[in-house]
Amino acid sequence: MNSELITNWGHHDQSLRKILELATQSLRIFDEDLSKLKLEQTENAELLRRFLGADRQHILCIVVRNAEPFRRESPRLMSLLTLFPQNMTIHESPPHLASLSDSLVIADDRHALVRFHKDGARSKTIIDDAEQCKPYVNRFEDILKEGGEQICASTLGL
Image (cartoon, rainbow, N blue to C red; front, side, top):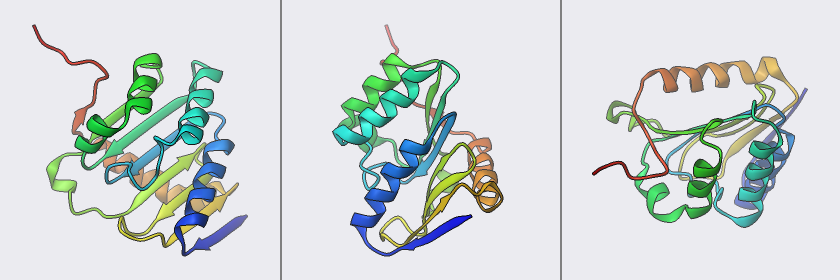
């Protein structure tokens, strides 16, 4: 069991990379708009690409409260969605969840980065502890069950 409190953005960013590196089967991400997670940075996007490309069974499921910044400012992630549509999904949560202010990054249901509020770096990292991650996994599943709009890599139309 390994849990650590984080209070600054530098340590938050390092912890995120560590969680991404530890993922071997699944990644679940819930966030305001992904901007503070910096998944669009080259190193993080490459970790995601390697994770998705390593096995067709690997799953990356992202839920955002506001998808507009993702659509406008995330070409690397949009490219991953195009390359790996079979194992990557992105959803925009329904409006009634707009008041949620936390952020979750969960790898393999055993490792997690939990940011307590969207505007601050105060977070908790959990490494190799499925029991401690279980409430966050359940929270993510509950959020996903609420529905919302699935984001596509291509624009549908005539």
